[in-house]
Length: 549
Ligand code: G16
Image (cartoon, rainbow, N blue to C red; front, side, top):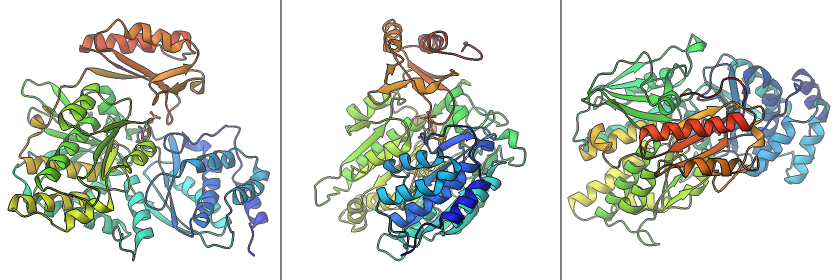
């Protein structure tokens, strides 16, 4: 029986020595300064091979990106066969392997094989892609070394958006089956989503102004340009922040994270009243919409607003079409995190009347929860999310059980929607197209969409601390259990504000803790956010500049 090529793995390990750093598999995989990640990449190449062997030679993906973070950062996350994030129990193997001494790598691999009953003789298939970051090519090289040292068959897809990599993994693993997801190439991705977008826009009643798209100076910019020829001419787009040659510009004063956190438009982005803007983030898996009102004020439409629009539309259309599954009416549900605006949760529960689940930050948690619904809509407030349609729902929609022309149209619209949306993972470009299609169908402007509910003023701040791992949370990350006493201090502040809400949690992608606050007025909300940020800084190891208004 074949066994681990110990010498080969050990020799290659020594070429990718581990630095004196402790690695953690965080919210979206390993994320650190790019120049510290060589050994991690090598070892994730090894682990991806093991994961493929464990799953009967299914294709496993790896995406090399640090998404919304600056160019100096980089990261890697492994992708399971249907495009979902790596199963959580394997995050422990990843962390263990990443932190082992160089010489111990073969024995750690052997221990994972034993724990997971992996037969080494099974073939392994792995694919990898990267965003536009400067450290990407070298890190992909280290990953390939790992996958090859373990004898895996590995394909490098070059520069991709994160959602394109997830799409390709799912398409490869479903090829030739009744669940075939699409042609497993970049063009296959454009064609599948583009064709569905052209079909769904037949229902459109609105002519949008030219949509300005902020590419965050990242991979989304060239990929969106490549996508344009597949989208027809129902909407016209203008692209901005497309410079991927000057690495310092990546996510710098632009992109979805900047817009969401700063609550203002990106730089180098012309906007006047009536302009519609859309920002992607650095790897194009998050999207934020915005416009400038007639009075010149900036209005943002974030992940919560996207979830509200999609949940209300899918519910209404399912009812209009009298859609019935063998289990009864389709169960439409929404999954959010603590960052969801309180008003959006109330709107979903009380007006749309759908169940809303709260889970910890990270699409890996949201995705899993959303799988429990016939239509599971999950969006983080930061614009990261998608919609999962169950097989039963898709089948019922395709069977066209409707009778009236309105019912048949509703079913066709829903069917197109299942193809426009990238169900493998949150996808900024596909989400943008889905939102535009829904608005066009309803005959709504961005302004009308923004009237679904009135947001409670909110603010997010970052605090740099000596040790963010000292912060431990409970209750879907809404309360701190450590440092002891910190939550009492936060509660005492929150109690001073009408509709006050605030929580603190360590980021899983940046070396900071995040502070979130809501209150009845903008002024109160800002005061609460900065007071809580100040408490964390003063009492719990703040370093650098104290957060200031
Ligand atoms: C990643 C995750 C998101 C998460 C975000 C911030 O996004 O995929 O689910 O909301 O990090 O996480 P944290 O608050 O733990 O830093 P991205 O776009 O950076 O991949």
